[in-house]
Image (cartoon, rainbow, N blue to C red):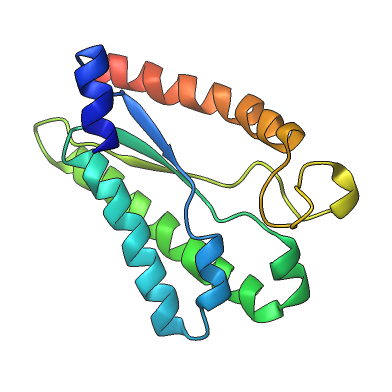
Length: 156
C-alpha cells in the first residue's frame, strides 16, 4: 500500500527503496529455523518492491545493546545478514543472466560498525537510533544510493 500511495501522489514509483528490517525480530529468535523465518520475511519485503521493478538496498541488521548483552542475538544477526547477502548476490546474478532489466537487491553493511553507548548514535533503548544516528546513517548511505541510481540510469 505505501508504494502505491507514493505512485498515486507522484505518478511514479520510487526508483530505489532502502530496507532495514529484522532488528526487533532478533528478540524472538532462538533457533536457526527462526532465523530463516526472519530472513524469508525480509526478502518478502524486498520482493514487493521488485514486483514493481524497484531496486532495493538491503541493509544488514545493525548491532545493538541487545546483541552486546546476548551473544546468541549477535550470532543470529550474523546468520541472517549472511543469508541476506547471499540472496542479494543471487538477485544480481539473475539480473545479469536475463535479457530484460530485473530489479536487484544491493546488500550494504550497516554504516555503524558496533554498538557504542557513548557514541550518541543510539536512543536510550540501545536498539533504535537517535537523531544523530539517523543523520549519520543517511549521510553514509547517500553516496551508495547515488551510485545505485546512476547505475540504473545506465541500464535503462
